[in-house]
Length: 221
Image 1 (cartoon, rainbow, N blue to C red):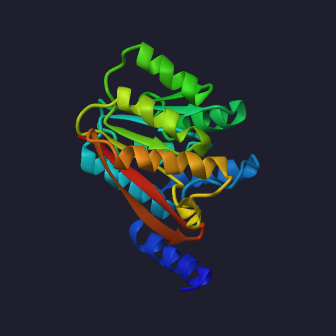
Image 2 (cartoon, helix red, strand yellow):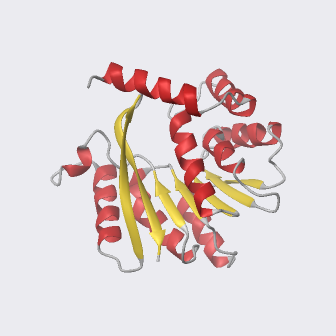
């Protein structure tokens, strides 16, 4: 199949399975107007991640990488009335836009945007001894995937699910001799997951408007 076929198929599926949502549309529009990088997950990927969170019955969600709050909104809409979510963003402008989009959608009462270095913020959550999270979505700098994974383990419980985006990278993940630091970190993450008795994981490969990629889903045993 060609990249054009991937794009058209994703558009077709999104049209059938992702009903129009004014909150999500607004977040994308604001992101574009603010000239933020167009690296947010696609609507179909947003539905996939939120679907997994629903399957887990997540009441507490943690996200790393807010951007404009698009994926956070997908996840926030799965929360029960007494649920809560923390999303971490390192870029001050992105954090402000994400917080504004979350507030405009009416979820600022249950979604906290934390500004700061993700590794440091995760360490703070560990130090605060917060209640374990049920679902994690990691969509940030892949160079720190191992650090994020180790922190998520400390913030999880048996049955929690951790999802990492962008783990296939057009198949580059299979290149063991790569000099790409992000790919090497993802390879190390996959090795840790595959070699651990504490977790079980699988990669869902995806194709679409963003090409060939995939998500790693990890369940805490």
